[in-house]
Image (tube, helix red, strand yellow):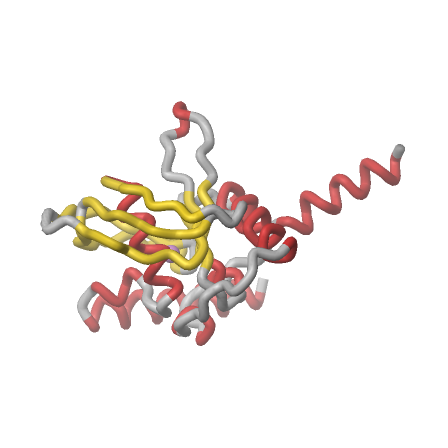
Length: 185
Ligand code: NI
């Protein structure tokens, strides 16, 4: 019984993966597509969802946990609306609106930094889900912003790449300092 409980506890602990902090070369790489939806990939998706909810965040891309493959997870449901964990594999934007929206974005790889980014307000996203089913969903508002932010991660692009060079440098220096502090702690 005790052993079973300990295993259960271990499983919970094991499912959380460390999130890479910018700057890291793995966050600047374009990721190759997923070839097969294996048990390992599904395990990674589960771990990423657990890590994202624990952080807490609304989106997390595979390269942020050091795995260079085209998959991200997101859940932009408001807290009172229940959970809507979404696994997105090999995503492709098939349409985006001319109308744009401005959101204050943040990123789990760039903690405590929030900056306004302008992106298309609505998109259609074609992707494969964790069951292997092909899906095409239309997203707007926060879901659209989040999906575009996460897809950028799969192409080695961060939201700070939309900011001025000066702002980006200031943020990058802040993150270097944070990483040093964390390494010392
Ligand atoms: Ni991010």
